[in-house]
Length: 275
Image (cartoon, rainbow, N blue to C red; front, top):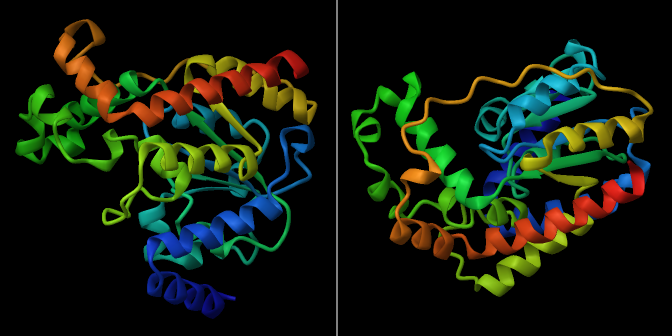
């Protein structure tokens, strides 16, 4: 099995990002169950955590429904270095959580069976602020003084995919495809297609409690409320953001804003149906 995984890694590396994205999205559209069929008997559960959308908090709730030994916490860069980790115990984990784009290797290593596929979005303006606070204040990033001392205005003017419609690009599998020219309309339509056809449920960070309650209702379990995770230190808050800075963030995240509105509406439809 390990030699098979290494062979899949080699094939994945030989392709363009867009090719891997197309392969993965076709596979996901055929193997992901819809929201009404989410249950604990279908596994693995794959939680694709978009950075700064309350992913760590959801990880804690998933430990209430899966044994710790059955959960693999790994990000795409780590999995690329050691693809054997997905089958380290000679069996696939029942839940996989980490930061992934739909073009990533993970989706070519999964067993050929139905899966539950989850993700969350956050209001794009708040997400950009949270990303800045994270990299500007944490000990890990503080080792890089150029990041630690970067002011917010310089940060938001960067040509950084993660803060330029990064959520839509992750769904579309185009986060690292820097040479691809795609219009906002095309990016939105592709990301919307992925949300509708390649995920069991995409939630909203601002309605996190309803998200895990909905998962519990689907699975016939009740999650116990957990204390919130301590947030990153706040170097910048929304009230500190000037009008021109706010306009720039919105301009660079027009697709994410539109997609967030769509996902929020769709999620609230699920809530009215299930809760």
